[in-house]
Image 1 (cartoon, protein in one colour):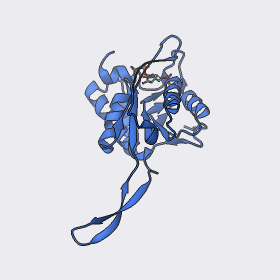
Image 2: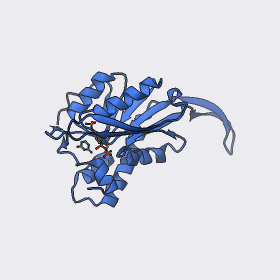
Image 3: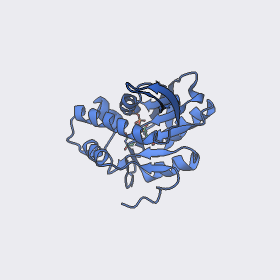
Image 4: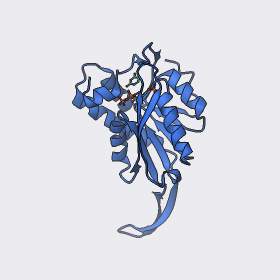
Length: 214
Ligand code: PRP
Ligand code: URA
Protein backbone atom coordinates (compact mmCIF):
# COMPACT_ATOMS: atom_id res chain seq x y z
CA UNK A 1 0.00 0.00 0.00
CA UNK A 2 1.25 3.51 -0.81
CA UNK A 3 1.58 5.81 2.17
CA UNK A 4 1.62 9.44 0.99
CA UNK A 5 1.70 10.54 4.64
CA UNK A 6 5.11 8.86 4.98
CA UNK A 7 7.30 11.88 4.72
CA UNK A 8 9.47 14.03 6.92
CA UNK A 9 9.28 12.83 10.45
CA UNK A 10 7.33 9.59 9.96
CA UNK A 11 9.02 6.17 10.10
CA UNK A 12 7.24 2.97 9.21
CA UNK A 13 9.35 0.44 11.07
CA UNK A 14 9.50 -2.52 8.72
CA UNK A 15 11.07 -5.80 9.64
CA UNK A 16 9.69 -9.33 9.19
CA UNK A 17 9.37 -9.74 12.96
CA UNK A 18 7.42 -6.50 13.28
CA UNK A 19 5.08 -7.43 10.44
CA UNK A 20 4.42 -10.91 11.85
CA UNK A 21 3.74 -9.52 15.34
CA UNK A 22 1.32 -6.99 13.86
CA UNK A 23 -0.54 -9.83 12.13
CA UNK A 24 -0.93 -11.58 15.49
CA UNK A 25 -2.47 -8.39 16.89
CA UNK A 26 -4.84 -8.00 13.96
CA UNK A 27 -6.09 -11.60 14.06
CA UNK A 28 -9.32 -11.71 16.06
CA UNK A 29 -8.54 -15.35 17.00
CA UNK A 30 -5.35 -14.32 18.84
CA UNK A 31 -5.87 -15.10 22.54
CA UNK A 32 -5.29 -12.39 25.17
CA UNK A 33 -2.04 -13.91 26.38
CA UNK A 34 -0.50 -13.88 22.89
CA UNK A 35 -1.91 -10.39 22.25
CA UNK A 36 -0.05 -9.12 25.32
CA UNK A 37 3.17 -10.85 24.34
CA UNK A 38 2.99 -9.38 20.84
CA UNK A 39 2.32 -5.80 22.07
CA UNK A 40 5.27 -6.06 24.44
CA UNK A 41 7.57 -7.53 21.78
CA UNK A 42 6.60 -4.68 19.46
CA UNK A 43 7.42 -2.19 22.21
CA UNK A 44 10.89 -3.69 22.37
CA UNK A 45 11.45 -3.55 18.60
CA UNK A 46 9.93 -0.08 18.14
CA UNK A 47 12.06 1.34 20.96
CA UNK A 48 15.11 -0.01 19.11
CA UNK A 49 14.01 2.00 16.06
CA UNK A 50 13.14 5.09 18.12
CA UNK A 51 16.59 5.45 19.68
CA UNK A 52 18.53 4.79 16.49
CA UNK A 53 19.98 8.33 16.58
CA UNK A 54 20.62 8.52 20.35
CA UNK A 55 23.88 10.29 21.16
CA UNK A 56 26.86 8.35 22.43
CA UNK A 57 29.82 9.54 24.47
CA UNK A 58 33.09 7.72 24.78
CA UNK A 59 34.23 6.47 28.14
CA UNK A 60 37.52 4.89 29.01
CA UNK A 61 37.02 1.30 30.08
CA UNK A 62 39.20 -1.73 30.81
CA UNK A 63 38.53 -4.84 28.79
CA UNK A 64 40.05 -8.01 30.24
CA UNK A 65 42.97 -7.34 27.87
CA UNK A 66 43.54 -3.60 27.65
CA UNK A 67 42.21 -0.07 28.08
CA UNK A 68 40.04 1.46 25.38
CA UNK A 69 37.60 4.28 24.71
CA UNK A 70 34.13 2.84 24.11
CA UNK A 71 30.71 4.46 23.59
CA UNK A 72 27.91 4.57 26.11
CA UNK A 73 24.47 6.09 25.81
CA UNK A 74 24.29 9.18 27.97
CA UNK A 75 20.84 10.61 27.41
CA UNK A 76 18.14 10.27 30.05
CA UNK A 77 15.10 8.65 28.47
CA UNK A 78 11.54 8.94 29.74
CA UNK A 79 8.91 6.55 28.42
CA UNK A 80 5.42 8.06 28.72
CA UNK A 81 2.62 5.58 28.06
CA UNK A 82 -0.79 7.06 27.36
CA UNK A 83 -3.11 5.04 29.64
CA UNK A 84 -4.36 2.48 29.38
CA UNK A 85 -3.28 0.82 26.16
CA UNK A 86 0.17 2.43 26.19
CA UNK A 87 1.12 0.40 29.27
CA UNK A 88 1.84 -2.83 27.39
CA UNK A 89 3.88 -1.05 24.76
CA UNK A 90 5.82 0.79 27.47
CA UNK A 91 6.60 -2.51 29.24
CA UNK A 92 8.22 -3.82 26.08
CA UNK A 93 10.15 -0.59 25.59
CA UNK A 94 11.36 -0.71 29.17
CA UNK A 95 12.77 -4.18 28.62
CA UNK A 96 15.11 -2.70 26.00
CA UNK A 97 15.75 0.46 28.02
CA UNK A 98 15.80 -0.73 31.65
CA UNK A 99 17.41 2.53 32.80
CA UNK A 100 14.59 4.69 31.44
CA UNK A 101 12.25 6.69 33.65
CA UNK A 102 8.50 6.19 33.23
CA UNK A 103 5.85 8.89 33.37
CA UNK A 104 2.13 8.36 32.90
CA UNK A 105 -0.56 10.35 31.13
CA UNK A 106 -4.13 9.14 31.50
CA UNK A 107 -6.34 9.94 28.54
CA UNK A 108 -9.61 8.38 27.52
CA UNK A 109 -11.17 9.06 24.18
CA UNK A 110 -14.80 10.12 24.51
CA UNK A 111 -16.47 7.54 22.28
CA UNK A 112 -19.09 10.03 21.08
CA UNK A 113 -17.04 13.15 20.40
CA UNK A 114 -13.77 11.18 19.84
CA UNK A 115 -12.04 13.96 21.85
CA UNK A 116 -9.43 12.89 24.43
CA UNK A 117 -10.26 13.53 28.08
CA UNK A 118 -7.30 13.81 30.43
CA UNK A 119 -7.75 12.03 33.80
CA UNK A 120 -4.27 11.39 35.23
CA UNK A 121 -0.74 12.75 35.11
CA UNK A 122 2.42 11.64 36.89
CA UNK A 123 5.74 12.57 35.34
CA UNK A 124 9.34 12.67 36.54
CA UNK A 125 10.35 16.16 37.70
CA UNK A 126 13.26 16.21 35.23
CA UNK A 127 11.14 15.12 32.27
CA UNK A 128 11.98 18.31 30.35
CA UNK A 129 15.67 17.37 30.33
CA UNK A 130 15.09 13.93 28.85
CA UNK A 131 14.31 12.33 25.52
CA UNK A 132 10.61 11.54 25.87
CA UNK A 133 9.13 8.54 24.07
CA UNK A 134 5.33 8.84 24.09
CA UNK A 135 3.90 5.32 23.81
CA UNK A 136 0.43 4.52 22.54
CA UNK A 137 -0.33 1.54 20.30
CA UNK A 138 -3.12 3.35 18.41
CA UNK A 139 -2.97 6.64 16.51
CA UNK A 140 -6.51 6.98 15.23
CA UNK A 141 -7.85 10.55 14.93
CA UNK A 142 -4.59 11.68 16.53
CA UNK A 143 -6.41 13.61 19.24
CA UNK A 144 -4.89 11.72 22.19
CA UNK A 145 -1.34 11.91 20.81
CA UNK A 146 -1.63 15.63 19.98
CA UNK A 147 -2.93 16.38 23.49
CA UNK A 148 -0.22 14.27 25.16
CA UNK A 149 2.59 15.94 23.19
CA UNK A 150 1.04 19.37 23.82
CA UNK A 151 0.99 18.72 27.58
CA UNK A 152 4.62 17.53 27.56
CA UNK A 153 5.66 20.64 25.62
CA UNK A 154 3.86 22.82 28.20
CA UNK A 155 6.08 21.15 30.81
CA UNK A 156 9.18 22.17 28.83
CA UNK A 157 9.92 18.97 26.91
CA UNK A 158 11.73 19.68 23.65
CA UNK A 159 12.93 16.22 22.65
CA UNK A 160 9.86 14.11 21.96
CA UNK A 161 9.06 11.10 19.80
CA UNK A 162 5.77 9.28 19.35
CA UNK A 163 5.98 5.47 19.29
CA UNK A 164 2.90 3.59 18.15
CA UNK A 165 1.87 0.28 16.64
CA UNK A 166 -0.91 1.10 14.20
CA UNK A 167 -1.94 4.44 12.72
CA UNK A 168 -4.67 5.75 10.48
CA UNK A 169 -3.58 8.20 7.76
CA UNK A 170 -5.80 10.80 9.46
CA UNK A 171 -3.93 10.39 12.78
CA UNK A 172 -0.51 10.66 11.15
CA UNK A 173 -1.55 13.83 9.33
CA UNK A 174 -3.09 15.43 12.42
CA UNK A 175 -0.10 14.64 14.66
CA UNK A 176 2.56 15.74 12.17
CA UNK A 177 0.62 18.92 11.33
CA UNK A 178 0.23 19.86 15.02
CA UNK A 179 3.77 18.83 16.02
CA UNK A 180 6.01 18.72 12.94
CA UNK A 181 9.08 18.58 15.18
CA UNK A 182 8.03 15.25 16.76
CA UNK A 183 9.17 12.10 14.93
CA UNK A 184 6.49 9.43 14.61
CA UNK A 185 7.53 5.76 14.61
CA UNK A 186 4.84 3.18 13.85
CA UNK A 187 4.68 -0.45 12.73
CA UNK A 188 1.76 0.01 10.34
CA UNK A 189 -0.44 2.60 8.66
CA UNK A 190 -3.88 1.34 7.73
CA UNK A 191 -6.43 2.40 5.15
CA UNK A 192 -8.71 4.74 7.08
CA UNK A 193 -10.86 5.46 10.10
CA UNK A 194 -14.41 4.17 10.12
CA UNK A 195 -17.41 6.25 11.23
CA UNK A 196 -16.81 5.25 14.87
CA UNK A 197 -13.22 6.44 14.79
CA UNK A 198 -11.75 2.92 14.60
CA UNK A 199 -8.75 2.15 12.44
CA UNK A 200 -9.64 -0.26 9.59
CA UNK A 201 -8.75 -2.98 8.90
CA UNK A 202 -7.08 -2.38 12.28
CA UNK A 203 -6.92 -4.63 15.31
CA UNK A 204 -9.94 -3.48 17.30
CA UNK A 205 -9.75 -1.80 20.69
CA UNK A 206 -6.15 -2.22 21.81
CA UNK A 207 -6.81 -1.47 25.49
CA UNK A 208 -9.76 -3.84 25.70
CA UNK A 209 -7.88 -6.66 23.99
CA UNK A 210 -4.76 -6.14 26.09
CA UNK A 211 -6.61 -5.98 29.40
CA UNK A 212 -9.42 -8.41 28.50
CA UNK A 213 -12.19 -5.86 29.08
CA UNK A 214 -14.24 -6.64 25.96
C1 PRP B 1 -7.24 4.47 22.49
C2 PRP B 1 -5.78 4.38 22.14
C3 PRP B 1 -5.39 5.83 22.06
C4 PRP B 1 -6.63 6.48 21.51
C5 PRP B 1 -6.41 6.70 20.05
O1 PRP B 1 -7.38 4.67 23.85
O2 PRP B 1 -5.01 3.64 23.03
O3 PRP B 1 -5.04 6.40 23.31
O4 PRP B 1 -7.70 5.57 21.71
O5 PRP B 1 -7.46 7.40 19.50
P1 PRP B 1 -7.32 8.89 18.94
O6 PRP B 1 -6.09 8.90 18.10
O7 PRP B 1 -8.58 9.05 18.14
O8 PRP B 1 -7.25 9.83 20.09
P2 PRP B 1 -8.79 4.80 24.59
O9 PRP B 1 -9.17 6.24 24.72
O10 PRP B 1 -9.79 3.88 23.93
O11 PRP B 1 -8.47 4.32 26.04
P3 PRP B 1 -7.85 2.97 26.62
O12 PRP B 1 -6.39 3.01 26.30
O13 PRP B 1 -8.15 3.09 28.06
O14 PRP B 1 -8.55 1.79 25.97
N1 URA C 1 -8.39 3.04 19.70
C1 URA C 1 -8.25 1.71 19.54
O1 URA C 1 -7.93 1.00 20.49
N2 URA C 1 -8.48 1.18 18.32
C2 URA C 1 -8.83 1.93 17.26
O2 URA C 1 -9.01 1.38 16.16
C3 URA C 1 -8.97 3.32 17.45
C4 URA C 1 -8.73 3.86 18.68
